[in-house]
Image (cartoon, rainbow, N blue to C red; front, side, top):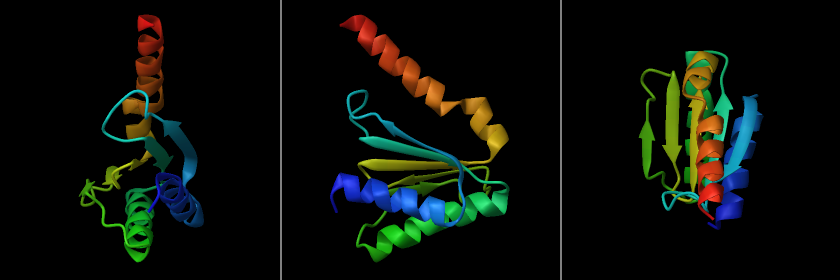
Length: 115
């Protein structure tokens, strides 16, 4: 599956179950690990797990096996690695603490300063 289609699949899977504060970050110029990061919040541990599970289910239905899934048991922060797209689903307090959006924007700013 092409990267753009995989990104859209993840976004739709999250939107279907009412993910909160969905953000999509283009990180292909910042890291070789992935091209896109999709970050969303769930309203509870159960919601976080359901959101991540929906991404996994949709990916598998499209013939894409996740490379890894972390944090399912706790439900505070679940990471779904789809290769060119990495999905982070977090409870709001965890998301506020780690602030991935700011972290990746500071990486971009630091790289811009190198140029």
